Amino acid sequence: MLCSKCKEKAVFLSPKLCKNHFVDYFEKKVFDTIKKFNLLKKNDKVVVACSGGKDSTTVLYLLKKFHGNVVALAIDEGIRGYRDKTLLDLERFCKKHDIELRVHSFKDEVGKTLDRMLKQKNHPCSICGTFRRYLLNKHAKGFDKIATGHNMDDEAQAVLMNLLKGNTGLLWNSNPITRKVKGFVQKIKPLYFCSEKEVAAYVLLKSFEVGFIECPYMEESFRNKVRDVLNDDELKHKCSKLNILNKNLELLKKLDLKRKDFRYCSDCREPSQSRVCKTCQLIKSFK
Ligand code: SF4
Image 1 (cartoon, rainbow, N blue to C red):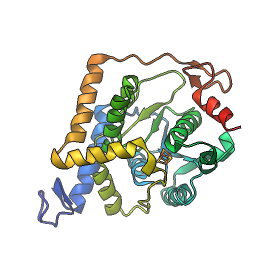
Image 2 (spheres, helix red, strand yellow; image 1 turned 180 degrees about the vertical axis):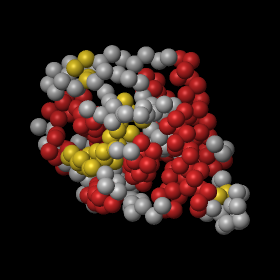
Image 3 (cartoon, rainbow, N blue to C red; image 1 turned 30 degrees about the horizontal axis):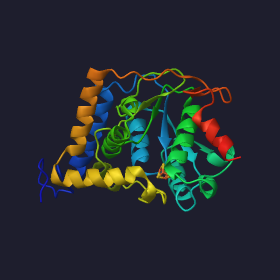
């Protein structure tokens, strides 16, 4: 099969493109998202939330190319055989591309690795997500934007999960740029319109040294079930993930859902919806 733009062999099927044209197509899509949704201002200080996986490594590389100076911020949850490996990939990548890397761990900041916490409690993703979001926001203070590697698949899953759980207030987070809320560093998602397959192809074609391993706790997550449903649907009705995102963006414009007001946690002084934030409550529950 040949590329739809030249006579070279196609390496990607939808759209049918050769290596060079696919790389151009992918980078243009990311840079167009940044411009269309005003994700960045010229002098913004940007930190990229990195895991060492394909998505955040791609964002790190492309933001450095598009914006210049960026810093990589990683959270080591303490997941043996997984995060230790992806962080090694990230270290190598940052060294090669001359990017500053800052790593903070659950062990140092909340007292225990995720693996150890799970000996006391279950629900890995809910514990992991709470601490991870808290630490990323805490250590991104002083930056104007925190970029994440969320791709189209992740975002379509998030919309569906929030609808299924009735968390309509959280639909605002499924946006290429989150709203300004005091105490939170604004999040940007340059891969918002790139499918998981496209990101994987880009990483392979650029020969980034990242492993394609999955977290061992992924299997148990609600997200995993929603992912299967969406992948199934995408096979039958092309573009269902993109449709979910476009409809969500349309709805958000019309609904103007209010985000709850935040106060400050009496223990850690980070933004919170209750007197003591969820993170501090969770830390106490492990003592
Ligand atoms: Fe954390 Fe769950 Fe993601 Fe694993 S799959 S890194 S436990 S949120």
